[in-house]
Image (cartoon, rainbow, N blue to C red; front, side, top):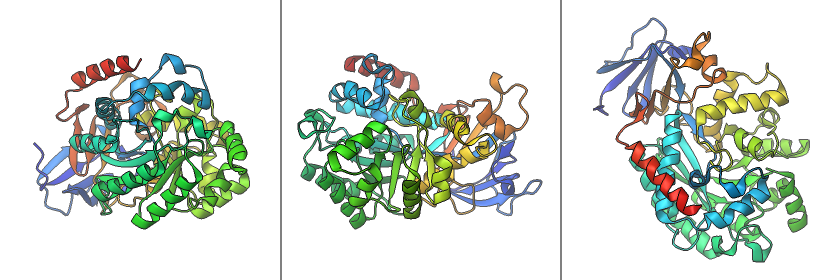
Length: 448
């Protein structure tokens, strides 16, 4: 059993992003306290040593956008071969039947899948609160604490149902007073402003086509009052742009500015259909973008202009997005997808394996408003992912760090969150994953 008070030397990794720690890192408590140069030994007094010579060591990957509950509706028959709006309208009636145990189990499944893929911090955007599901975020907090994963849970919302010209069925929307009161409750109960926070809360109206202008404005004011982040889907499809023009007489970025969201507190999911002037405005405001490559391809939504956004000043991170629009929650595989998709737009020399790893770590951290995670640096949280290159797809590989992405790593061998081993030998500590998978299958069958 790991002693949290011990000083651990993670020694001589096979490869790592930061050459300053080629000899390893020293972890004390939940923090990286020393980087060891190649061939050197630590200055700190060491209690334990872990030999990482067979492992590629990365900062823990950070998932900037997801919908945990959607792991229950992967490859759902009613939603196959559709684009965003028809995909959503097919699945909303299914999701309206969600029950508390479904949120409980799907949260465990999503976090476990992420953890096993080297992810140490995960955002979830939960916006469905049909009657009986009012405690959905509380359920997610409980499960994240059991698994020991760092989370940014967003109190999502939908207030614009079909009767008001929106897409969601009325049974899935809530009144604005209910949404704002519960948002404040969750911030007070769970949000931790301190460095090393394991739980943070953000406010996340679902999208321009599912909430009112008043709710967007009120959410921005509440976020400012309590110093929390803002999150929503934006500019994902041309349909969304047409909806905004018809409903509000504005393009999505103009609408975002009109409701007080064009600032560093905001990060957006997708961010595909911006013009050049909008990209400059987003960058100047410091708005973050969570690039979701698999979802964008599966729903045929388009390609995020990542490098243009970055050059303008926007942080760019990576998100697996909902498993129903990706059918997976595998973060290291999503990093490879980002490399492949973005090379089609920008070319091989500009989209390197180092670049996409940086998006999935430092970039995602910036989207979430964090400066204590996402890097292997003294003083940062000891969130680390370790991958072995002993599977068949790596046979014959040269550069270990490049091989991790190019050859298609799928699973981490070890994962540390806040200085604690959560994955060892490819297994999550203390979790009966077979029983969990069996229950998820039963609950998914109920929804179908």
